[in-house]
Amino acid sequence: MTTASELRDVALREFASAGYLGTSIQAIADRAGVSKASVLYHFSSKEALLDAALSPAMEQLAAILPRTAQLAGSPEERTGFLVEFVDLLLEHRLAAQVFITQSGALGDVPVVARAQELIRHIADARPDQTLDDQVRFAVALGGAAYLLAQAGSYLPDSADDARLRESLIRILGELLAPVPVP
Image (tube, rainbow, N blue to C red; front, side, top):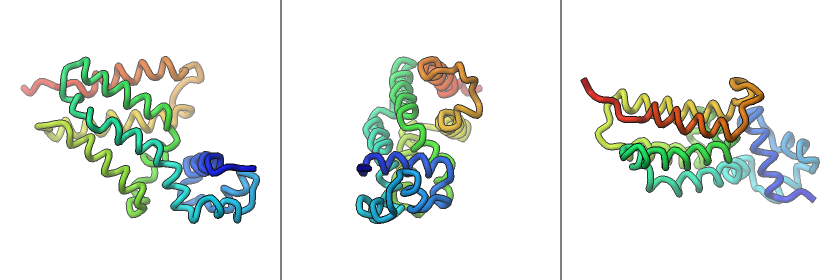
């Protein structure tokens, strides 16, 4: 018996590999080894499946939102936020991949619009940002999410998650450190 949780995981893998728009309920059912009716028993639509697939990552992201001001704080505070953010990305790398690579085409889908709003809250939590600060922030956090989602394409096989985690935290800290204005 395939559970809703298993179907959600299969759907997330399909959305990450073939894209949300390129994935059908039938493809998810086939991959899960169940009938289309079985998928629709658990989820009323493909959009409901996307919502279920992305919501755990979004809930975790929403939980760290109150601490985003730490990005503008001391190096220790910034590192504390980055540890949580990188751990979230590692745990939810497929959801991050779907969001990073497909959010432009899916902005009218409610779960994607909610995710975009969460990202805006993180960006807005940094006071007195210059355009350079905004670009640095977007490149750093978006790049980290993309790298993790596409790790097999960009990183050597020897890059285990523990080493990758430490590297990301260090490099994001460097990228997001305040830059003295000349």
